[in-house]
Image (cartoon, rainbow, N blue to C red; front, side, top):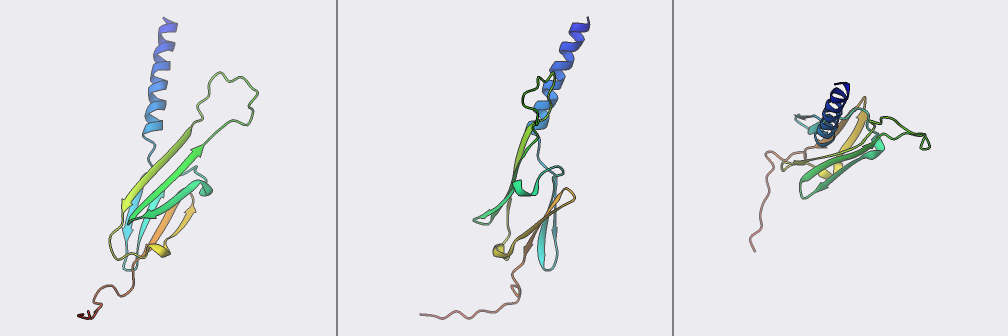
Length: 131
């Protein structure tokens, strides 16, 4: 009977690890002010240098690879739950943002990405020359 319970626990552990690895997508908040849009990514335990932020054709992509590995490579482990995780989130950016001036700060487990709006976009008058 104990062997059956042990096997059941192992099955649930495998399922739980599978669920965590595939569902590892950080939560986000998106805030708009008069001057910018801010994306906040909740990613505690990640290293700042592993984040990558790209903008391509008005799509902002945030990604990171997080790895927890043992330092004692020569030891025999009975159980090891450290794992490598990665995520990627993509957002369509609205018109009127200055993607050349995006800034980011990683502080207390939260990645803050500020995307400034282009100044004087509203009410701007432009004359079009007819050729």
